[in-house]
Length: 207
Image (tube, helix red, strand yellow):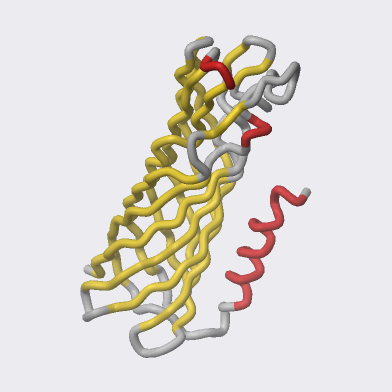
């Protein structure tokens, strides 16, 4: 149940903005760069912690890029499609170098967006929707390639330099990026079913 608390929180945020003024109608598009979280060490391999085997994720975060396009349907509500390339969502190295490998993930999303202005050129937004993900695992123990569908939520802030150009900083959370509990489980390689978040900063253009 706790896995979906971010989803409940963002839905509440969207509903709370219904009576508030927002952005003008119109299409927009943008792109950003930042980082994504990675799979927890405990989800890397069933051998981790057994008979003295230690497993390390190379790093807790990795590079992420995103692109999006949307349309503001009303002063508050809009719809947005997005693409996220999360590069490495997991990288494993068992002690002794017996097994090494990584998981790379990408996602296409479609979300409802609600905006709330804080000042003339500054506002915040929340979004909730779904995403189609694709993850690929490549290890010295074997490979795996899966895809699926997951809920996704996001929050962020926007600053408009002019009528057309602006800056966006946001966090998006994908509730699942795989099908299995471990990347390597009793010698079987799979994509890891775990939540991944991205934090990005970029520019957007209002048409």
